[in-house]
Length: 314
Length: 314
Image (cartoon, rainbow over all chains, first blue to last red):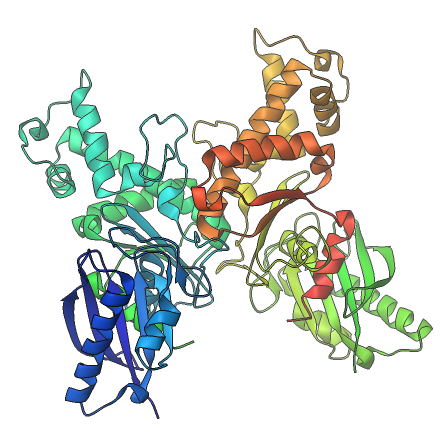
């Protein structure tokens, strides 16, 4: 019986490759450059060669695989084609068909990275044992993944779970990367947190803050200052968590999941962040959904690999 | 081959019963009182007797049925039990088990009324041919139903699609029926529209309005005045549609459906309402979901019956 799967998390500069058994045991993992200049066919060919070599070392062949799962930084349509890629020079391409062709017909599943990370957390992470969850990934942007009945909600236009672009403030005048104004991402991402903090520092009458002396301000510097009680940093963190907590309450009124999972670099700030998000969430949530747990992700940067592999097990 | 289904829409004062073939043809429909004082067992027994009599007239028996679908005004858990009923004296009961027992073991499906109405519109209404949709029912309250991959999103706590209780304004001080403040229902229901209009009329410096002379103000009076260009009524309608359109944009960032369907009594105001909701929706929506159609429901009060019957065909 076939029992091996590759899970590949494709990013702008490198791909994380995991070799799994079907029960979710990670046997090996490694990275390879994606070459941001290379096109999809070239990059996927290099990956296919790499996977084949790895199998040879294990005295296995492509025909021993259940399949290969791939996540990509872009919206994925139901047929496995991808309209556009963030930070990757791959044009509109059907990754599922092309990669399967390069792998001699092995089954390939393709998903959006934020959605697939949620699936990973469901399989072997913070949401293990759950059938529904919503994950938000707080990094440079805010990614979102919605899982209902153990399946990713892809959406009719590949925009299912695009929680980072939920419109949460129609007074906002700054523009989001998507072209709209007032997206959640403008407040709850690393970039967003820096943005609102710098705005506050530029305003008159802001509270005294160690951040006025900060040369290279990033989300970690701000959240570390908040943990030490810096008034302005705390204010920024509360703004971030208020927008995020209320957005999760809006998400719950649609999907009512078993659990919320918070991942991404910013989430490493830990308890203070989760507790503050939870507080704003509970204030805004409908009573039936009020006790949904909000938990930090467990798989870190490996979540994409796990989820990519999990796509093959439906 | 079995080909008949009953679809029953249970309301506070009466139940609408439809007798369908499995292709969605409505053969007969009638109503019977639910008796708001009667308990669940008594009411369901009366319905079971009524269904049996109807079958006898057609020279059919219970064993000829594919099954019976029932929608109820309350949150339904996955096992078919219902925690509480709005306007109905049924205590916590497993409607699925009890009704099936009273019907001699015929398969019974149970769903929440707003969710089931969405399923009806997917089967034979405005969303026919779609696999995903979100419906909002604008009546005394605001009901919501989310369908993904042709299945109702029930939610882990029976609160899937509770869009009427999405928290849309944290400045609100008036309380919603659910106990929270700032729910969509406080602006976008018939009651909500009257509430915001009366508040505006009570404020100083409101624009002149025919509504100052209105003795019995209801949503229809307000929307009729808006259609005739009454400044204050238009203002109220815009407030309502802004909250609703933006809430739908938030819904799209989670579920990204093929279509939105607007039903309920208030939606009979027609084009002006749909157009105004669409305008606010498009302003707030993520680009990938911006062109989702917003359409009026087609099945009117029969949507529940259709959806209830459709639950049997999974």
